[in-house]
Length: 316
Image 1 (cartoon, one colour):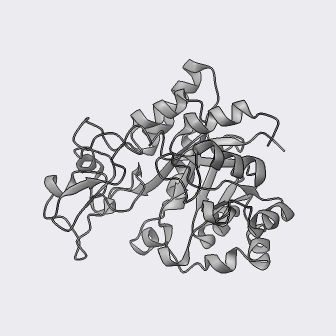
Image 2 (cartoon, helix red, strand yellow; image 1 turned 135 degrees about the horizontal axis):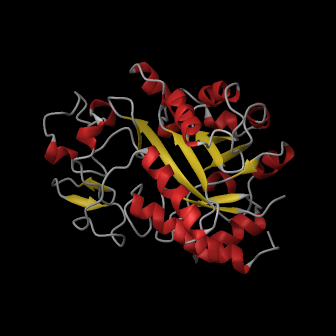
């Protein structure tokens, strides 16, 4: 089995606002093997790198376009043109408290009121990473998540087709060693299996999260569920508590994945949000890489994950 990989979760998002080109460049410099791109569509069909289908958690859309929310009060990227999206300022992920004050989800990260970050397109990010690969003499992979493809389809947009078209245009469609495609929706991945040779990763969440589509993730983690996943995917992307129990011991899912030769790329290692009872970043890394034997890890702090793997090479 190949060496485990470091997947920069939304870039080096422990240090710079998520999904900014600056965050991706830093992750590249830190030695991440793959860099994640969550993608949604603009109103005019441009692939944007953004974790949510909504804009208000990471941009100033409420101030710039105060009358553009839908009836649910949310501002959807799909309701804005590329030109409009380019006017938005990105910032650290935030929320409003009961008094309406805007607060950072991770208070010790990049300050909310600083910087002039912008929302990138997927093409812009691919060009950046391709250029850095050339100038730094390395080969970094894309790890693309299709966000809410069923919802996009209901709105009249084909997100998977747009992703495959752009990968074809940029020369990445035939690079299975350099691209992963991931999604929470099993039906989307099953359809993609017939259209691409790129490796597919089935993301596994909690049923309570109500991800796009009516997917039963509890059933997916059973022997029969994992057997079905293995028919269309090369790996799984489970939540860390699906891989390690409260005692940091590997769960039965680990053995099931191994039985079906599925890669395991759990999410997310956050140095500032460790699971309860875990004393350190390296303790979590040890439990995941050494005890559970995962094949890769999504990390907000790719430098720390890369440092652990380099120091423990050959022990995984």
